[in-house]
Structures are given as C-alpha cells and as structure tokens.
Image 1 (spheres, one colour):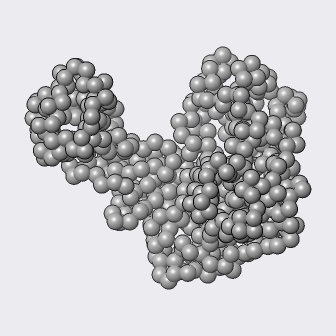
Image 2 (cartoon, one colour; image 1 turned 180 degrees about the horizontal axis):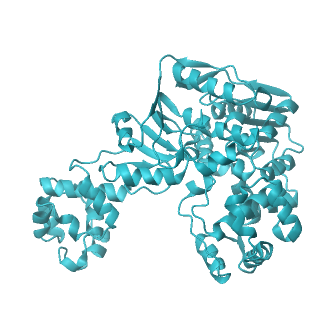
Image 3 (cartoon, rainbow, N blue to C red; image 1 turned 120 degrees about the vertical axis):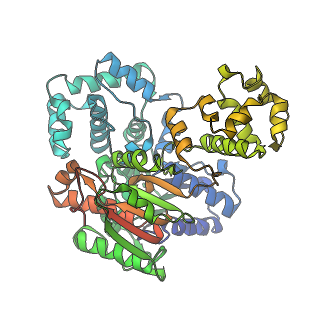
Length: 542
C-alpha cells in the first residue's frame, strides 16, 4: 500500500507524515519496524525530535530514522573515513591541478563550484555522473564519459576545461577512486553506490520518505530497493519545490510515483502564507510551469492579509535597509553566493549591521557577538557574564601585558561566577589599562581577532547586541524548508544562468521552481527586488 502526499509550501507535509507515524505507533507498530528518511540532516533531526517529544521515545529507539546518506553510512561505511577538503586538496596537489576548497555546505546546496578551478569543476562533474548513472567512473569507459557529458546537458561552456586536452579527466577520476580506496576513504556518493549495488533492503515493515521531490536518480534507485516487501509506503513532497536539478533531481519521477500510488492526498491549506502572498505565489507557478509538468494544487490560505512589494532599486543596494523591520525575523535571499557575499561586503559590514547566515559561518558568530558586548560593557563599566569574560580572555593579545601570565589556561579551571564586575576582572588578572582603552575606544587594537571582525566592530553602533539576531542572509537554496516573517528576495540572476534557462522548457521551469521556493518562505511580507547587481539580468525572471 503506497500513499503519496502532495503539499504546497506551508501546508504541513512533514506534520502530516508525523500524524501517520502517530497512527502507526497507536496501532502497535514497533519503532524498529519503521524507516523514516529525509533529504537533509536538519529535517531528519526535526523528525527525530518530534517523535521523541510526542511519543516519549528515546533516540536510540529510532534506528532507521535519518537521511538516506546516514542510513547507508551506518550500514556500509562505519570502518571508513569520509573524504574532507584536506584529502581533496592533497589529491589535486599530486595531480598538479588547481582546486579551491569549498568552505560551506551552501555552495554545495546551490550547485555552485565556488570558483573556476578545474578541480572543483571536475568533482562536480564526477558527482553528477555517478549520481545519475549509478556507476563508479571506473565502470565507465573514456568515450562513454564524453557522451554522458553531452547527455546530461551540463553547462558545457562552464565545464570546457574538463575536456580541454590539458589532462585526461577519465584517468584523473579513476586515479581519484584508487586514491580513496588506498586511503580507506568514502564520499557521500560512495555511500549511496554501496547501498544500491548491494541491493540492500531496509529491514522494516514501513517506509516513510519526506521531501521526495529532492531525491536524485541514485536515491530513487535505493528507494526502489527499500520499498520491496513493505506493508506500507508513505511519500511526501512537492514537485513545484524540486530545485536540485544540478544533482539530478527530477520532479517527473515524483509525478510518476503519484500516478502509481494507491492513495494520493493533496493538502488543502497553507498555514504559513497569508492570503495576498499565497495568491501571488500560486499564480506564479500556475502561469510559469505547464500543467502537464506538475500537480495542480488547489490551496487556500488560513490567514488574511500579507503584503507583496516589488521594486527596482537601480543599483543602490543600501535601499534594501529600507525594507528591514528590526522587530521581525527577516531573510534576504539571493540566487547565488557571489551576490550574497557582495551584499555583505558592500552593505552589511560598512553599515555595521549584525546578521547571521542561514547556512555557513557568519562573521557575527556567538564568539564575536559576546566579545563585542564585552567591549560595550567595559566601556560603560557594566559587569560581564561568564561567556563574555571567557571570550575576552581568549581574545586579548598576550604581547601587550593586559592579562596576568597564564590566565588564559587558568580561567578554564577556575570556579566561575555568573557575572564579573570591573573589580572582579582586575582580581582575576586583567590590567587596569584595559578599562582605559575601552573608554577611549582603543581596546580593539589590542585584540587578536581577524581584521574584518575588527572593522565590523568599529562600524557598528556601540549598543549591545541582543540575541537571537533577527536578520539572516543566504541563497534561495539555503532557505528551503525554513520560514521568516519577512523575505527580501532578489530576482537578479547571472548572465550565465540566464543563458542556460532559455535553452529549453525544463531549464526554464527548474529556475521558476527555485524562485517559487524563495517566494514561499515569508509569513507576513514578501519584498521582491531587482536591479541590485551590475552585469546581472534583472528582467528575465518573472
């Protein structure tokens, strides 16, 4: 028995699956007989937390709850080491090929190779071929590899260096597979290949798959193995939110599953989007994706109101600040990481605005915020909390003799106080000059922190930062599965993306889905901006 649940953004697909799960538990199904798998680790953790809190279970009771990757890793790779940036850098150094380490998972999730280095392009190509063909490169001959390059409609202009006759990509990738084998290494695709090739079937009675629209071809192949002999199968997803085409995800597979299912449920109410935003987003997909390429969802909004604003800011990025409401959680979303980084460097940092990144490490980390607040409190003669005190001790440079020698290591073993007054700080080993420097706004010069953090401290007004922060920046891909009060969404795209999406209907509709995901994150206001970036195409996306 297979049930598939389709849902517009905010309709509660995961909640609906949790209701199915509760019914299974109430009917006496053992948690060990249930496999609940998701596309992302965050979604998996959310499902575990909900199950633990709602049903009084322990996490160890949920053996088969996790991402497909994590389940495959636990079954096949516990005795192996996962490939890291260090390993990749080592391999490409041996091969004398350029490789730029990818510092955050946001580049991976948005399909960006983060630079033009041939090593990055080669690894992106390597993953795509294995994910779509369900084969190792060593199982593909050299001429077949070139044919696959064209078959998958890879952006050939961007990937020309791979087949430029400077090196043999097939040989390099085969050597990379030998490198992994010799060093007992696996990457994330290897985990999937092992599960697929072994024809391993999850030993449960029930299979539940959330966010099914994001599954890649090899994950669908694993699903085809796992669904065998199951008493019940539940799938949840939204074809309109299938945005990982660069990893081989294809909404048509979810549509086919819908046609072959025993039961098909379409959730009718969006609990996130207010009516005006909902109507805008519903019209957007109805008008820009052909009916034959999607499941038409008749959905109503549970709440009235909502505001949609559209403006061209004419290259003035600082105008974005006009739309930020300080008391509201706000996402500022961009199509690419390069636009995000430009906005941070040209607006947020010069204007002294604190923010968090939706994914990845923000300059305004807990440490930097605590340190900034410590500086403000020192200037005002206020007591510091224990976290601020610890970060201040850790950050004051030893060469200026503002700390008693050995304090950095000694503080870890001290009995901590909730607060440290100026006298307390002097008592544990701070020099009085520190307070003088704080009052004269010179203390930053004596801190061992990065220059961009120093610059941010100088630019920001000298008021304490209240946690949690309410402003977040990221790519559209990084916001998937999340929500905010307000969303500021740039519809500027790069010339390269613009060139790609006009080639065919599939590419165009895939890009529409990306922006549909961004537009459906807000609960109260959707602000659509254009004209923020030089050399961008601001008009092609409706």
